[in-house]
Image (cartoon, rainbow, N blue to C red; front, side, top):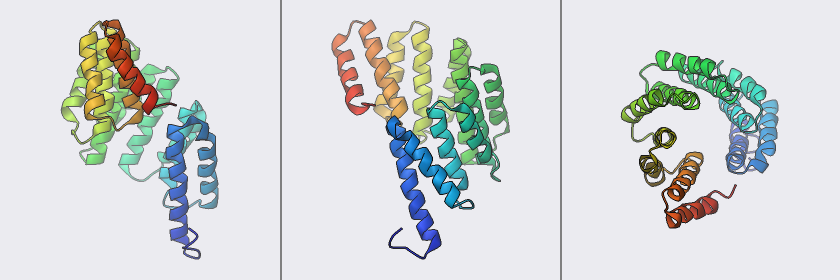
Length: 240
């Protein structure tokens, strides 16, 4: 930004790069969330018509949701829904569903996810939105203890989503592990969680979850040594 003084678009891009980097830090360190939210709001105030408008509101909504402010998150995602592109509109509806899940309004959340799954088109981006919606519905079904329906749906996602979509597969295999764990199949559950650890550990939240449950289930199966190994990795790699 300093080197590009007088070049408005370059300065704006550099400043947004700084803000988005701070958001990434806040996603790993909850103590930085307020700082990141303020940086986003300051950028929005200084650049009301920037090309980063919708990306900014998605980030803002994600941070507010992680902080436990569903109303503020909803306002940010409502702005995202105004985007002229179908992909972002579908993404906003998925976020609306996630807010309803946080509020334990599971049937209403399922209705949102169903709407996305049924209306998503055939573009690569919209297919991802469909799978995200299906996984949102799986989350609701698990919380409603409808394990058979949840397992069928998560298997559908695993079979249909591209192997390159590692985050989708990480979420899906963790949900499969959840269903297996809740229905008394600890050995199968460990294999599902191990898939996340070995094949798609890139999503920090999902990887941490997999390590946690491998440790807990290993304890249940009398493998204290294995449990301690995974617990140590969890504490080392994800101290927050």
